[in-house]
Image (cartoon, rainbow, N blue to C red; front, side, top):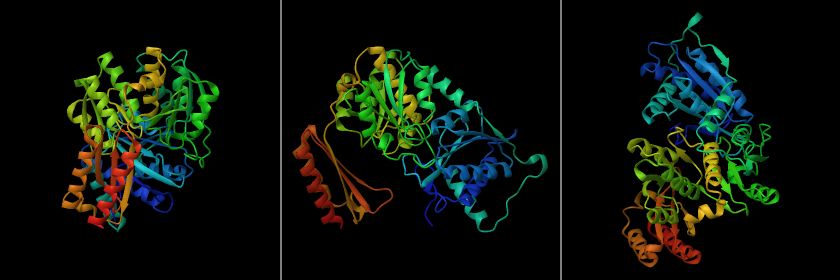
Length: 452
């Protein structure tokens, strides 16, 4: 059996891969591991539990709550809220543990469990490993030590979480959004109530789509993975900005008034300049992944802002930020972390900060994102190859060197083995889309020939 925890918690098809028994067992294991680590020492432990609107979240939430309470943990059920809201409330309420049930941008049949440590930070890999080991040991017959009587956990519905989180979001904005018309696509997900409320309280004229979750329609033809509805709505209503979230609202993509997509790199560029102007861009540095568009890197160089690049994944962006005290980082996919105000990517906060920049400058989004030119990017997946040799194959190395010579300073090549599949990802950027495609196809052929 493979490792249960991936880069973003435990995820799979609900009631097939991710069962009620697994959710309950992992929750009990998490409580025991954190108790052994001393997290609960000297006080009665408390956990915050939230979920997105998926139908399966209802029974999985019940299983998680039952597991935690049976292990002696008091539970605050905050209901349907974004992942960053659960992280925020875990910190602001002084809870020992946060649990979020969501599969983010995945289709409705999937679901997932993500644990947060005290303060709302992602649980360390070492603790995740210990939770998994403990779960496996007990699922094969080793009995749990169980509290009884007054030692069992109590379960409370915490309705104040919604208002507390929205107040936090509005409270950290540098300026109001009065005069802006904004369309929000909530992906029929966890931000369906939160995001429109936050933008409205900040002063924006809000139009909503994708804000009627029924447990089955999350991410269905809407949200950050399907921008066509948002593009049309922004143009139809003559809005200044469109904001799209994913299912658990930890990411944000945008659309300008003409319906053009604005990705995470472009949002990062706009926020970086605004934060530098405000004096909040610590160490004059922004963190992005190696997959960020070359145009973003060139724009930061031109603007005199330092760029630190991490491995792909918002967890690696966050690790770099925390290790070196940086304030801003993110991914092309729209995971943007503003570390002074959030411990994880927060799509609603990102959208609010972007809108605040529009309001403060009085400039349209298309003009603000003009700070960077998004260079054409071609990505080809090469399947059924020995990905372990991609960095050591002389043939691949020679092909990459030839491609880099051809592209010069206006292009870039990146070969990356997949973390989950037997394939190599070939990414090429160039000033011209046809050149990027031709170089990428030659490299893909070289990888297939050398490693196939």
